[in-house]
Image (cartoon, rainbow, N blue to C red):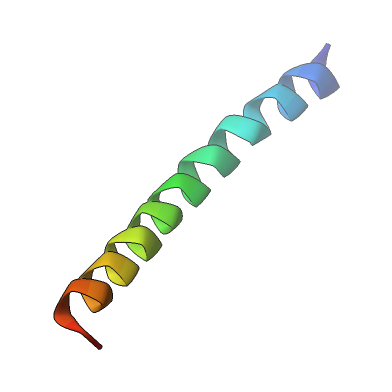
Length: 37
């Protein structure tokens, strides 16, 4: 049961970490696109 819970807890953390990074990347690309850089 422990391995299952451990593996189950990891994906949410990964998604939480990658989601903000993707959001920042999208904002950066959108800002650079609008500014014209």
